Image (tube, rainbow, N blue to C red; front, side):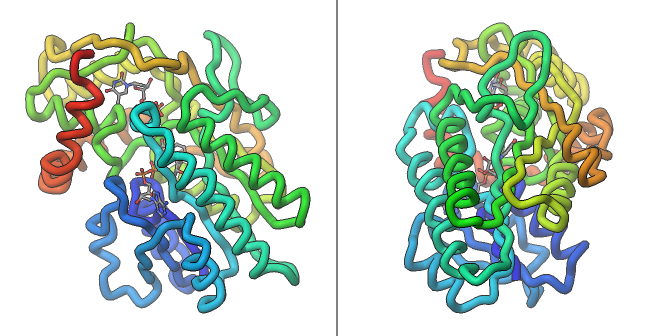
Length: 338
Ligand code: NAD
Ligand code: TYD
């Protein structure tokens, strides 16, 4: 059985679907706390699937996690659960230390005890943001020193360091993946692409931070999930794998593309105060995973973004329900007076 944490979030739910589709004989135990970002609706189509078992709980709850290892034959962990939004980490960093740092250490400890006699595999889902910011040229390799800018990326870097320590000290078979910015179905509409799709669809202003020329390397979530599966099955313990889409775009280009696709005016763009500590540019060198595991991204950006925009149009009920709840209060706090 594979323990997938955070399997009700954006990337986790896409990964659970991929596993159920491609590895139907491998049962999945999905541990998710169902924070604001976790949504069982993302997995509605798995209702009645005996190969998917959901447990609501906190990865930082040591008794709960130890109990899961005692009751189930967990042969691998794929650890997605985290507080994942930079802007929220500026409003309240404490939750990021709890879920991302303490949560990861609790899981590592439970895995170490359970796999004492050997075996097991622990895949840590990390991010390019642990490397900090790039100038106009170059890209991050797996050897780039960690230099995180935000409380979010600092918490992910700390979790990565715990992974390295458990591998070096106890030989725990941990593998770290660091991926660039994902887009695709089920992404919570606080992140750039779904936020802009959702607001443009409603004819609302689109808040672009600073000059809008910050660059991200966008990858379709399906490509990320296939990379994680490759790492789970063939990655070398102790190794780090960068995963990137090879698709660098300034934010303003993304926003304009969404406006064009939805036939909305560029007058909706509102330049707002920049994010403090805003990383200027991310770019990934993914040659290691391409060379060693034969992975490469398959979804061309133009196709992926068109499908994603269509998906949000077809799932308006899903995001309308989300933005009518706690999200309203968050949006007011984050963007008020900016
Ligand atoms: P998300 O915010 O959409 O989902 C996170 C999930 O984790 C939610 O289902 C939430 O309920 C759950 N969760 C949070 N804290 C928990 C806790 N203490 N215990 C149990 N469950 C908890 O995030 P996402 O965008 O799907 O990201 C998933 C992972 O991928 C994260 O680790 C993130 O750092 C990493 N990542 C994300 C991106 C990206 O572009 N979104 C890029 C690279 C890496
Ligand atoms: P985001 O989706 O939050 O991902 P990350 O900060 O983890 O890369 O943001 C992507 C980029 O878009 C980032 O440069 C910040 C910018 N951005 C805006 O300009 N306006 C917004 O409202 C949001 C949410 C992000």
